Image (cartoon, rainbow, N blue to C red; front, side):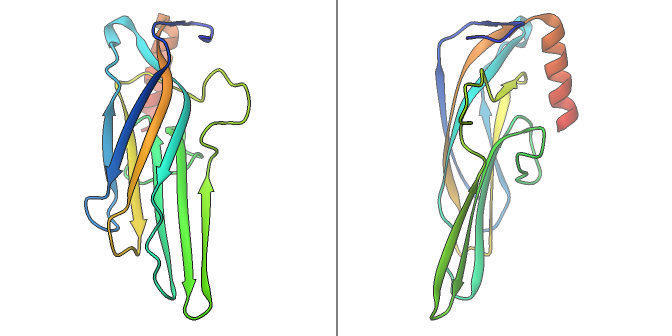
Length: 170
């Protein structure tokens, strides 16, 4: 069901992507083209996001991290859901202590909110970005993502506000 000011123009779309760090512990961005038509004020209404982040390296006496986010604009850091342009985020932290054991904690902003929201984000620009970075890992981190949503046409005022909001949140 489209929200007020939006006219749904497609059925449910699933967009899948993957990302691997360009080198271990290096912030890397993958641009995902939504193929929107700005002349028709087309937007992408995100209904759910599924992030599949691979775990960090298990190293004795070391805390390792793998972190991932999906954002509506290009970022220079992973960011969290406290940032206006981050749609979803996930982080896995592993702490290993020699001869004692290891603990792994997963921090995730619920991939899909547990409610009946019409959407979790509206993307008015043509791309979304998958961001990944590891900390103290011996190999490059990798992840998969799936974004669920639909295309919609926005009225002129809403489209202008959405584009400006995305531009300002970069």
